[in-house]
Length: 180
Image: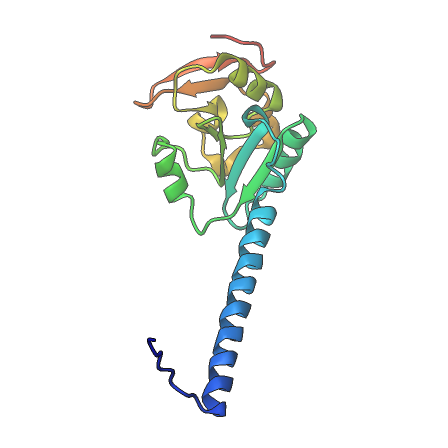
C-alpha cells in the first residue's frame, strides 16, 4: 500500500488560505458583474437596431449644435449613439476625412463620415443607394468657415459625396431629391 504524505497546516494558515480563496471568488464574481454591466450598458440602445438606422456622433465638449442634430436624427427614426472624445483627430483619421473639414462634430453612418447636419431623409437615401465614397458633407460646410454657419444654412444646403481622394460630387439637393 502506498502512503500519501500530507502536510499539516496550522489553524492560522488554514484561515489565511480560506480568506485568500474567498477574495479570489469575490474578485471573480465582481469582475463578472462588471463585464455584464458593461455589455448591457454599451449595447442596450443598439441591440436589434439595424445598421441602416444607427448613427454614431462624435462631438467636442461644448459643441453648441450637436444635440439639435441628434434630436433631428432621432425624430427621423434613427438611433444615435453620442461620444465625446478629447479631440476629433483620431475619429477623422479613422474615417479618412479630408483635412479641410473641421466642424465641432462628425457622424459615422454605414462606414461613411457625415460632416454637417445631414438630414434623416438624406441618410435614408444613402442607405438605399450605398454610393461609392468616403462620406457626405453639406456644401455650405465644405465651402465656409464652420464657426459662422447657421443650422438653417446647413439644412438648406445641397449634400456632397466625398470620395477617398477628397473629390466632391453632388449627391442631393436642398429638398433631399437625389441628384446622383
